[in-house]
Image (cartoon, rainbow, N blue to C red; front, side, top):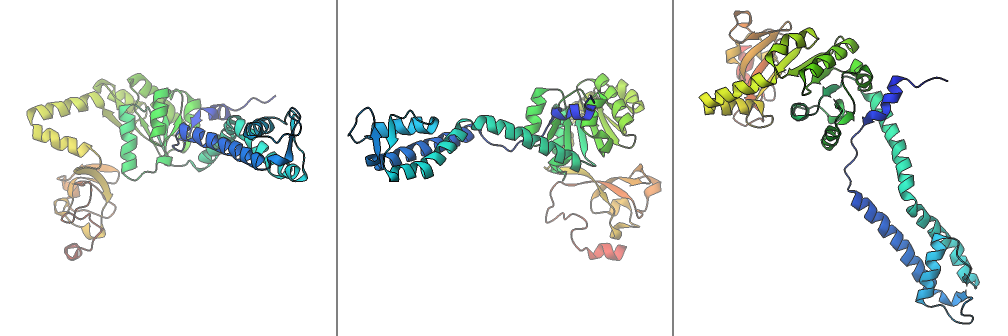
Length: 363
């Protein structure tokens, strides 16, 4: 007998975020529907009480209590036979109205089981569709404070939540990532099977940010083996581990402890400078550091003359400071790393969004 592939076995670990819905709302709807069927049927039987016969009280017309009793046993079972429809009208109402109501009532009683089975089928379909459409996505390994901040920063800068996949073994991370609208692979990111479940081989970028440097190194090695071309951005806690992380295959390495220490030092020496640095690192408010394409009107200009504050120029996949003689004049194909308002202001329009005659004349 053929064994299931590692990918299919790992499929059960994939959890896609569910639409937000209170369980109490769903339960309340079911109770309301069941009560409506019950009360509606009781009213129907009571209004037609002349057409029913009670074997316990021959010759007497059934009352409201008997109508309620008959309805409950009829909707929940096939009845006990002590109260029966005796006229053609009552039998017709039972066949056309009460019997369908009984079916609906029973479906509501077993609705929890049916919903579980249906939700499992829907989840399998959603995962299959997710796998089919998942290409050029971003995988975030570790969903602690750093991983969550990275994911939300990507979303604020235009990345769709559906294009981000979280890998983390923690149940807490699963809950938080789902609350943020991200798909989650639950498992150890140092295992090939888990990273294969996240389709790392098809990913465009991978962010590695667990709380352990050793785990980050192993995860980076495994990612690089699965996808030699993917861009890997990794975090380490200690500066001494930066060379090891780069040897493992990381393209960019962020030293969290050193970076926080520098910010603390700057804030101590100059609170104003610390505030500006914090502003630059906070997405969506004040200033931001961004990378953008050069505009046609900016070709041939000096970096200092661009309306955005240029701090670096990327040319031929190499980054140059704005004062580097190599980039004295901007050229086609350059990319600019700039400081600009995080939101466009009337007095500080984004280049390329408005016609600027001065740019055209300079070009």
